[in-house]
Length: 255
Image (cartoon, rainbow, N blue to C red; front, side, top):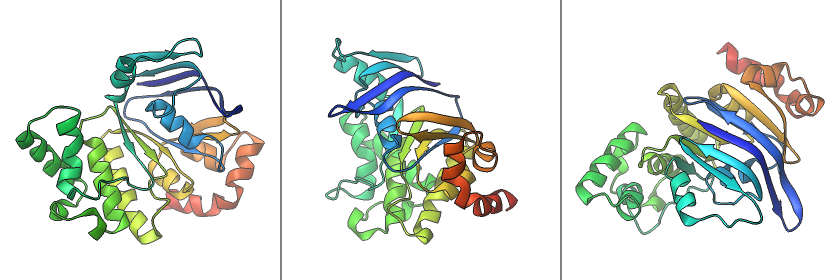
């Protein structure tokens, strides 16, 4: 479904992703965890080609793209890969001048070239799915943070992507509002949506993700099942990172 091979990325001479290899199966829910600056968000942005890797190869669905300093990536390769992915950002990035319904419709109209009636029907269906259909005609500024993030999730799902990429989906929310988003993502996972989430919220990762990848210094230090990584980590760096959370995470699996 998704395969990253030897992905490297540098910013201003600093290596932020180092020879990253990663494979995600269709229908899997995977959390990227690690300290700030470990490369989680950069890795997500490389999958969606918001950032172009310096080296390596990326396969999403039936589209494979190779990267090198000598070869400039063609626009057709970027568009071919992006059509497989949907992106949810930590700060929502809704269009303030469009209603909730129009925000979800926008990409279908301008990128996918859907007619308005079809786009409106699809947007309404997705707003119902994320539990916010009653706000279809509202402006983003009138919504809570949790509601805005659910609209952003609906927008990302609109073109039926093969994988949903979530960059810190709860970090801008207080615990009560974050719970709305967690439940929405949990339902999507149960329905078989392939998801890759970068998060500092280890309780979110433990309650939704079946697989966890621990990044540190731009490297994949450890990968495995959520319970193995959180409760029985093999690597010292992983153990140090999760050591203060073991008790609270155990409560998640006990619920």
